[in-house]
Image 1 (cartoon, each protein chain N blue to C red):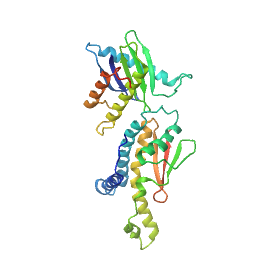
Image 2: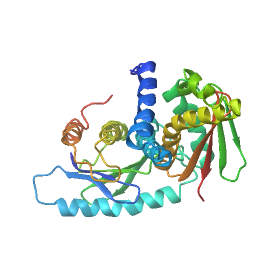
Image 3: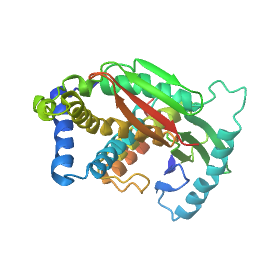
Amino acid sequence: MGKEVSESCVDSLLTEMVASYCDRFYANKSELAARRIEAIGYQVGHQLSERYTMERPRFTDHLEAIKFICKDFWSEVFKKQIDNLKTNHRGTFVLQDNRFRWLAHMSVDPSLENGGASQDPSDAGESKAAQATSMHLYFPCGIIRGALSNLGIPCAVSAEVSNLPACSFVVRIKA
Amino acid sequence: MIVCVAVVGHQNNPLYIQSFTEADDALKLHHIVHCSLDVIDERVNNPRKSGPMLNETFLGLLYPTENYKVYGYLTNTKVKFILVTTDLDVRDADVRNFFRRFHAAYVDAVSNPFHVPGKKITSRTFAERVSNIVKSFGFSSG
């Protein structure tokens, strides 16, 4: 039997976690905050991958594991699959989600957008907004890294936001 | 009767090992478990080409000794489960069913946020669940 989770609760929890780490525990040390949030994601991914790989045969290669992340793992966590997977066949994979659930209800704070109005209005606002969204992506990055590490694939994961609900995760497998 | 079950981590570190005998033969059983790790390695690195399921988690009978039968199971996350039993006519389906339930118990145990990955499983709930699964081994055919 599937268990249900309130989406707005998860959204609020994620937002609150990012806010706590960025503004309270590690105010002005965004690097450290990012690492802490990523570490929480890592543990979550580690545990989830254990559960979701239960009744399936072992993976033979990296591509199979990545496909598992794109399809089954993503469906379990986000109720949808990754929209596009690209690879250079040398250990780098780009997973693109056109409507990433945790960014879907996110809007950019208008005060941020107007913040740099005096000089270069679009630039300053956009970079601040991009920073704010990217802080929210360390958690899912950690989840992917945790899941893959648990499957025996050490890797580094980073995220890029193009236009808001869409984002892509770049997985670099360590040789 | 199941005399010993063990969980071994991906670096061959013991995560949980429990014997279910009255006699003082824990050391002997641990030795059997230890030996079976090599057999698992061999199975995984040189899979038999004819095998129906190449990468199945259930590894089947690892090796029979004079008194025991040893079965193995390897998860996707390279965690090994080992079962030592004294029953000589064991049905494969029973063993599969055992490992499936054991795996579920293991997953629940490691999903505990207070469990440190790679450390021994000390949860009492897990121990109780395992002993229940061990007791019901062979009776449930579903």
